[in-house]
Length: 393
Image 1 (cartoon, rainbow, N blue to C red):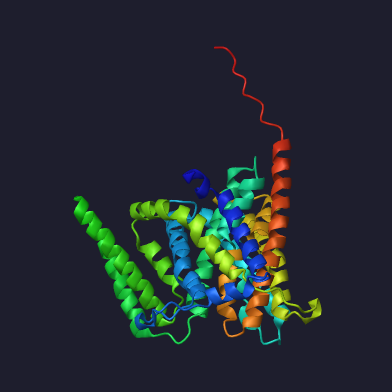
Image 2: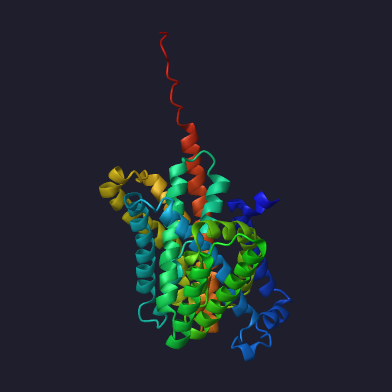
């Protein structure tokens, strides 16, 4: 059972199922009760945490997801595919293209609408979904395609983290941010203390939890999005400790964190307006996710592969690069979060943006599944190399 919930296929299916259930519930007789539950504020205002249930999910629960992303990112940077600068160059440039082109396409389609602040929404790639689709439909594909996709998606998440930290920080309280830095420094020190006795280990773990929660609280108070605390904590953990944390939390992320977030984020009513009345932001996201991603990743990755890939050993054939680009258009988790942050003052646009992310990601899922299946079928049709004949000595 543990192996099942850790699998990329399970994660993708659980996310999609939760999003469909959330969308269905928001357009059913349960809609008003569900909205009231998500907007209920637990009585924690005295702690400086006057958050609704929906915000506890996006600011608190999702910090666990970003903690795991940071641990995976650190592994790739230290010992994985991104540890070699030359091998990382091509997927890094492709990831930049997968951010720049969708953002530019979004800005072009919303120019003059007053909704230009939503440009980060179509720039994200959902690692869980992209790898899940590859695992479901990609039997027989070479391992280098998965490695390229993983490296690109991790780098894409790094860019998304930077965008969230820089673009969506409002009214920053530098005193709280300084306190968070002190808590993180203490976390780094305690995480590296070597202890042998069981009681001492338990005390250290308790101290790390307290420091981690304190850092999250201070980052939230600073005005920077609280999920950034999860990123910082993941990067500060030693590799061995980070691996143990990842092994323990990854099943919970797949079973609870991501599905709950997907359900809560997808609880939006389908607008009862005609297609022409939908906002430019809706159409820009729907187009920029599937089209902008595949264009950006293919164009930038193709050019980088032509000039760098041969020496770096990370060049993909053209149609494999297109396949990765289609999977890159599955924005989902991080795109939904960016949509909430970009249009936080306009509930109607938030709802339309959520639907646009679901539609655009859905188009990319279908296109990605088809592209992966076609590439896998073509790979399986290739003749196996003839066995080497040995002459008797």
